[in-house]
Image (tube, rainbow, N blue to C red; front, side, top):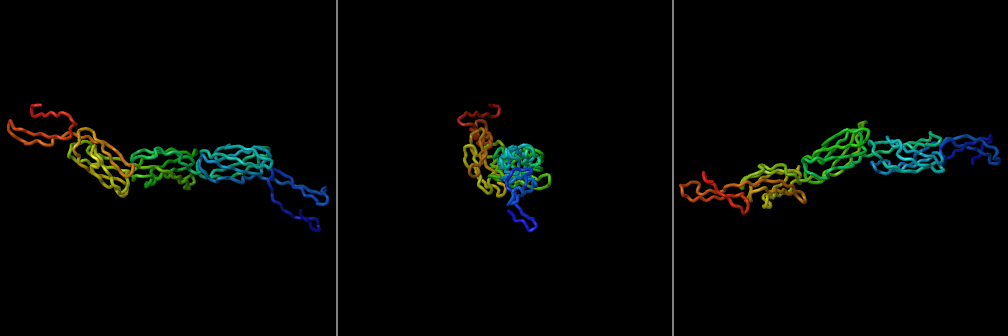
Length: 342
């Protein structure tokens, strides 16, 4: 109610309450005589009043609530590049509440449109939602330097940059339209342990966004054995990477545990050391390189036979000569050939 002035005028205000959208009638009544009245019209526009959450990744659920729509009409929810992500029906007050699942789209800001499909197509409202990048797959989840890693992602846009552990921009790619990507990189030399994979994009407007982190475990690898075969008493050089920084490395050789130890580099977890082939039977032998915890790698070395002693080294016919050898098979017969006598 509002009291008029001495000359019959008045001014009043009210707040638009929740009613169906479209044209509605404003009626002004005389308090003492309801037949004295005047009318006008007011157009209630639609509004999206809630989007929850305001950002998220592909596969997440979003709730949309709106009012100011037709009574019992169908409302279509449009999301970014998807014309109909879902539909819903309004209640008697012209309100609705619905949910949808974020589908695969380019990242960054996407428009949510709630459109009345009833007799009043002008009842349309919009809001925004920020699609965040998501690393959908990393395969494998661990590996050695030199291995290939595949990454799949959703919700990105523009130039994709992948950082890996201590390496910035280990690889890049460019995507558009779909927002999805598949990219590979080769594990470079880094110390043992879990390393962050960070995927970021720079969209078509040049804005950097979407730093998403997952993890990959770098494990040890023997990268060099030189030579790959030899006789007892000769030197072997072995090198590796993917081990802990400044940690003790143990080398096992065939039947000999701890034929040598060394300490890895304090920056990148690499090592280089040598050992002398000890007395073991002829055949392929396994070299195992152990770092801390469960970090190890293996390779092989072939032991060749060797005549170790000929005594005396010279003599006349009839001289007794002793021959000793190493690196032969176990419990086998060895035949000695001498000059023209085999």
